[in-house]
Structure formats: structure tokens, C-alpha cells
Length: 623
Ligand code: AMP
Image (cartoon, rainbow, N blue to C red; front, side, top):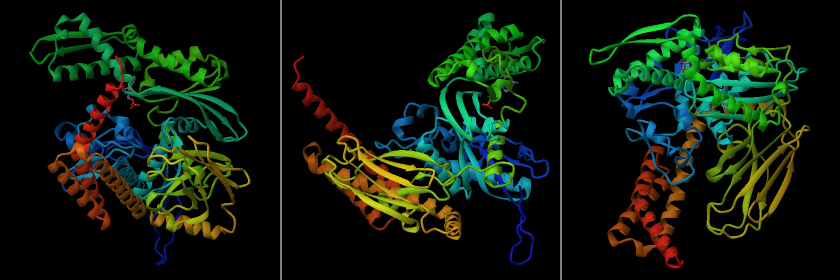
């Protein structure tokens, strides 16, 4: 609903609109609930509704997003970033096998921090890159609606972990958006069909999401307006593209002239014809698709396909999705007859055979397919945003936490365990470790608020987990758990999992807080969001630098015999450069460049140490 704001000068300010954003791997979409029609609608401009999730980072540091950046995938791959969503909340180790598909440079780091991408000496992490996309989507909506967009619901896959969700939240903040809630994509898809809006209804929903390159199936339990993901299964390399390739193979088998095509141009064009055939037959199964295909060498072949041929080509993909459905049902301990609604998502669900298959597997329910399968996630997000903004008087809001709850981590950063607007009751756990060798105590300080640095939030309490057995830094596994009950009582516990040492406190976060104070804290969080996230990213770079200096110093102290004089000098110099930058709190890019430099320089020495250790271990063994 658009609220008209009158500013102090008496002028009518632009209306404020809340939106839902489907932040996709390939494309992103933004939607809102039109206050006149009361219907969710995707927001479109002269470039259409879909915003390709592609960023072109220009030499001057500016960014181009979407359709305007797509051309760069071929002409300037090193500065054209795509598939950011696959990197979000992931470390280098997580994505090392995927790197070959990316044309841009990912920094090779031997730690658990989020991957970084380097373009022209500037370092970007996936949060900043996602923020660029979200910002473009926000501006698109603002221009199309002639309104201000400051609040949004953003969707994520159901399998996203805590770090990936937090990263998405941070990206929103950096883009100047207050993230009202992070919602699972299958939840949003269900909402777009109205499932879960009525709190008296109970549903068990299966959401089938088949896109171009990925497949996800989720089973949701909806009760009292709460969506629980009972199971989720998927394949990150299964989709409509596989059907196209299968059609291509079918033609290659029929036409020897096509078997030897190696010219990239021919293969690409053949793939596009295969996709065209698939889409044409999906729209009209009675027709026979015919195409005269001319190869680059001038020879021509007549390609045909009918619906039976398409069915044969798609069989394997459909079978694999069936296997995932069976596995998801098994995980959820459910039988097909327990499912009372099926929702289809993703462009490939337009292939009619999928609906036929789902109807035969779930004969007692009608499959929800009336909305555009590319839009359902964004539409559902818009509906959720509208509800959270309080625009739907017919819908009761669930009890939620008014402010985020978290603990202090290195460098005075706020690590949020329970984000604001999270439903109550809830329980969250996260693992931490020590940063110094032999550390036996760990202080857990609990804070409330929306700022990135704890100094600007409200302290709720603290305790010290004592008696952690002395271990090298990074070894202890300390689980901190927050449990917020229906009465608003927060139990914070910490446990070192190797030794079992534990400690806990109870806190009443809302005690002594007035509504006005909550409002003021929210406002401060929102007003400072962008600078706060920038400060957090800077502090994280400093933390990373400090940790590396600590490790590198210890390394040369213990393994002086592995390094010759030059190498020792080179290492010390690089440690010194980085230490100076840290001492003066240099800018983020300079620190990260010095971190990369020290890491790259010392990597061969670490490998040498491994070789020594391995040969020592082998010597001790009888073969
Ligand atoms: P998405 O990743 O959700 O955008 O889905 C893209 C996939 O949907 C591509 O593989 C398209 O070929 C496929 N697709 C789009 N329209 C149709 C259609 N009418 N029939 C079958 N597949 C389609």
C-alpha cells in the first residue's frame, strides 16, 4: 500500500512502496501489491520485468547491471560478474570446483571467510555484488512506480544456510533497503497462490521448481501461518537446458552431418533451435516442428520434432526430478496422499508433461499453475512484504522479535543470531571458535539492535565460558544457542563441543524498552545501514589481516629452517607492510591486497611444510 508522506516544507513527498524481490542466480524480479487492484504485480519498465543478475564492473569503478551488462559476458568476461548467488556466504574452499565456469578472478584463500572477487585492484565480496543488483532492482521499481522504495522482502532458496541468509540481509542493507524478512522461495511461491494466508488453514505443500539449469523440490507444512520446510531436495545441474541438449543429441543421431559439428557457433545455434522446438511443442503439442538448419560450411539439414520426440528427449530429466520428489517425501516421512497442494515454479514447468506427471503422482490435488511460473516467487514476496508492512488488515501478524539479537565478535562486530521480524518462539545455534592459541576463556556478550557495531547497540548481558581446554586457535568448537520463548524470554547458552564445558544465562530483551525506543533504534539502524555495512566489511578485512599476521609470525618463528634468508626477509617485509596498514586502519582494498600478497607469497612455504610432515609420517610407517 502506498503511504503519502507530507514533508515539513508542505510538499507532497513521493509515496513509499514496499516490494518483494526474487534475487535469482540468472535473473531477478521485483513485485509489489498494487494498492488499487490489491493484486500482486511484477514491476516492469522499457527493458521488461526480468533483470539479468549480471554486473559489469567498469574501469572507473562504476557498475552496469542487467540487460546492459549481459554483452560483457562474451566481450569482457574478467569484469562481468554472473551467478553471484552461487558465491553468497561461500568460502573459496566451497566453490573451488565451480571456479572453472567463471570468467572473473576469485581470490584463492586458505580460510573460511567469504570469497572475494578482484577486478582492477578492487576487492568485492558477494554481499557487495548482490547489493549492486538489489540497488538496480530498487531503482527500477522507484522509476517505474514514481515512488520511494526503502523496504523489501527478499527470497532465498530453502536450502540456504544461516550465513547465506545473513549475507543476503547485509546485501539489502548495503543497497539502502530495510529487509523486512528473508523468505524461502517455495514459501513465496505458495503465498502467491494464497496458501498460508489464512491462519486457520493447515496445508502440506509440494513446490516443484524447474528452471533452466537447476531443480528444487520442497515440502512445506503450513500451520497457524507458519511455514516449516519439512524437506528440500534438488540438483544444481538439472533443468530445461538438459532437455535442449537431449533434443540436440537426437538430431545429431539422425543426421550424420551434425555429428561432427565443432564450430562453437554451430553448436550454439543448434542448441537455440532445440530450445525453440521445445517451447513451440510445449505451446502446441499437436504441431510438428520443422526447421531448415544451415551449417557454417553452407550445408543444410532439415530438422523435425514432434511431441513424442520431445517426450523421449525429456524423459531422463523428468525421471531425475521424480527421484528427487520421492527422496523429499521420504525425508519428510510423508506419502503422496499427504500432500494437499502442488505449486509449480520455473520456466521449464511450462512443458505440459510436467503437469501431467505431477497430476498422476498426486491425483487427489489440483496443481497450481495459473500464474506465470517465472513470477510466482517475486509475487509471493510482494504479498509477504504487504502483510509485514501492515497493509492487510484481514491478516493477523505473527508474534515477531522487534529488534535483532546477537553477540559481539572480533573487532566489536554484531553477529545477529535472531534477526528482527523473526517469528517467536524460535531457536538458533551457531558455531564459533577461538582466535588465540591456548585460549581458555571466551566472553559472550549479548546485544540487541540493528547497528553493525555492538558499541551502537543495546547490551543485554554477558557471561564468560570458562575452562575451555587449551587448544590451538581455531580448534575449539563453541556452539552459542539463542532460544526465545513465547513470553519473550531469551536463553543464551554456550558449549564447547569437544570438552562439553557449558554455561548459560536468561535475559528479557524487551525489559525496560518503550515502543518509542524500539522505533528510535530501528530508525538509527536504517539511517546508518549503508555506512554500517561498509564499516563491517572494513572491520572484517582488518580481522582477516590480523589473523593472517598472527599465523604468519607464528609460522616463521616455528619453521625458520624451511625458509632461506631471502624468503625470510620477503615474508617479514610483507608482514610489516600489512601490520602498518592494520595499525593505521588503512582502507579495505589496500588491506585485502596486502593480505592476498602475503598469502600468495607464503603459500609455497606452507606446502613445503606439508611435504616435510608427510615424509616424516611416512618414515615412521612400515609399508
Ligand atoms: P528459468 O530458469 O526459470 O527462467 O527457466 C528457463 C527455462 O525455461 C529454459 O530452459 C527455457 O527453455 C524454459 N522454458 C521457457 N519457456 C518454456 C516453455 N514454454 N516450455 C518449456 N520450457 C520453457
